[in-house]
Image: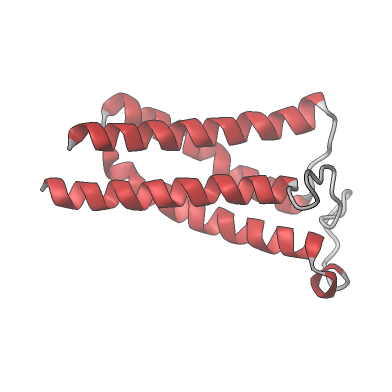
Length: 141
């Protein structure tokens, strides 16, 4: 049972690290300036790397509740952000988002994969894994 918990923590750490490195790649290497909603998503993703890394080192699966909450909030922002990019009725009423419009799409792979979509995917994977870790914790008691 302990191996499952450790693998869950490894997965959460890996996904959050990949998402963090990906966002840094797009902003620092490619030069894409993040909009306000992108910053909010980063604010919720970056700490997951730190807390899951510490939890992995300490073998403390209790962090799963924290990562689940952060993934729910970050995923909600990602859903809204993706919606204002892809849905015209939301696009037209999108609020101003600072220097860079939140409706802008720096990337649009396969016609639907944008940066908020990639963030949403990471948040969903983290949430699902966090819920499994919480379930496995209960079973091991």
